[in-house]
Length: 161
Image (cartoon, rainbow, N blue to C red; front, side, top):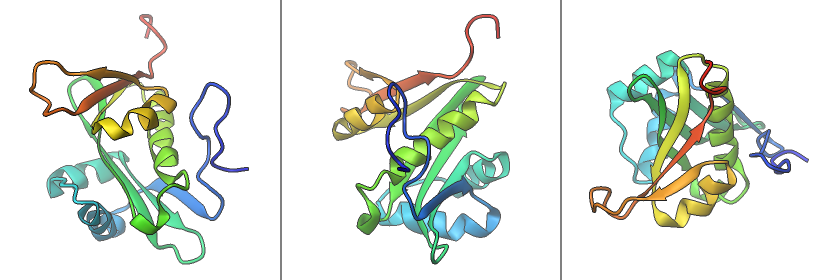
C-alpha cells in the first residue's frame, strides 16, 4: 500500500490518490496559498528559485489536480539543501502526504551531486516526524533558534564523494 514505511526508511510513495512532483511556475500561486494557510512565510524570490532548480514540490489530489501540499527547499551553502517550508491543507493532514513530500526531497537530493546533506528547522512537536524520515535531530541550547529543533540527513555517499 502506498505511503507505508519500508523498514528502516521513509515512505517511498505518496498515499493512494495523491501525486508528488516538482512544482512548475504555474503552481506558484497554489504553493503560496498552501503555505499561507499554514501560516508559513516563504520569500517569493526564494520560491521562484526553488521552482527553477526543481527544489519545490507539490502534492496534488489525483481526481482534481488540486494542490493539497507543498515543500520548498533552498540551497544553503555548498552541499546543503534546507527544507524551508512544508505545508499540507488542514483537511488532508495525517495521511502521509507531508512524509511523502520530505521523502521525495531527500531522494532527489540523493541523486544530486551538489547536495551532501538535507536539513530542516522545525517545532518540537514535529521531532518524531523528522526522526521517522531518517533525520538526526538536535536541540539548540544557545537560545538562538527560539526553541525550535534542527535536523539533518546525510545524502552523500561518504568522504569519497
